[in-house]
Length: 392
DNA sequence: TCTGGGGTCCTAGGACCC
DNA sequence: TCTGGGGTCCTAGGACCC
Image 1 (spheres, rainbow, N blue to C red):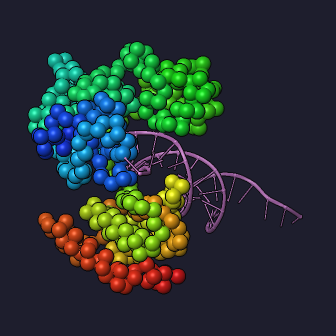
Image 2 (tube, rainbow, N blue to C red; image 1 turned 135 degrees about the horizontal axis):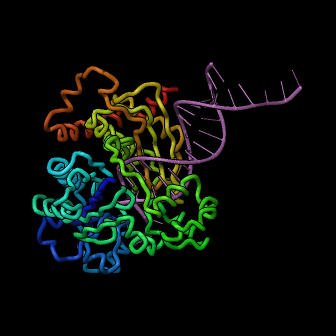
Image 3 (tube, helix red, strand yellow; image 1 turned 90 degrees about the horizontal axis):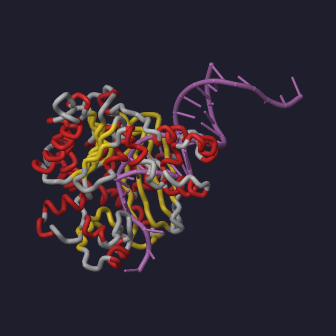
């Protein structure tokens, strides 16, 4: 029997901003961009009290909470604090840490539990040390598998510690509405409610098995087992290697201006290439996606024969994908994704010249300079039309 | 004032190979 | 005559998470 803890930072972005700027303490704040199309990335509890939620459009948030303070996001700071709390756990508690997202992780704490130390003691200690050494609040769920641990951490926030043992699921889990269940999203929840499956207890109910089988695809059994407290308890360390790298941006106004789109495409592509190189990875599949004014996403991808990380080549392929598929469309958003990734060392490729370059401590600044240069170069040379000539 | 951005995983259909 | 079956990879779209 394993003891799994799910550690979830409380309103992470907003908490980091409060930590960095104590003047924001005890005021309702949200982290969001500041244009007409921005949405809330994170809201602290004072803002949530008024009904503000993550992913809510900014104009709506300021409408229901006029005194809310809008703080611009500092993503590199969030990355930094994310590393800090993960490092603390890995150094002081357990190497068995599965990084789930920027602000949460699973930890196998089985080996830390003994006659004198209960799982709750262990988690009290983790929570206290994160607060003391990093300055951020978190909530922790404890259970015998990952599903229950994650459900548990949601039950009490902020600074909560909640167990969800199998003996407790009847009282703590089954009464919850279906949309609270992990991996049941909006679509599926709606479908289930229409068929009178309204609580997690209804999913756990043996009499509903056939109905579930009909309504959900093969996943029905995972949900059924989860609701009955049965789930995966293995920490997956491989999850810590990225499977895709993407960047996208919504234009301030919908556009069909080829030049404007091209500049943005090159900028986004440059950024994902930078991350690719930083991760010391190579890519085989390049995709370009757009969102049209009807909010539909369209994705076009191209898979190469070999793994590459050459900046110009990736730019050329992205340009070709765009010009082959999306010219003359009015678009709301454009994005670039690199997927089918592999770690360089796994391909046994000898380090090349650029390795030294990228590893410089001030690589970021240098990259910024080259990025600006390359945008200009690209424009001058009209990379995208070159791409067409070169590849057709 | 109107709905972000970064991810993972799954599915279905088609191409291709044996 | 008229069309098997398994396996793998690629593509596009969509559900879901934070």
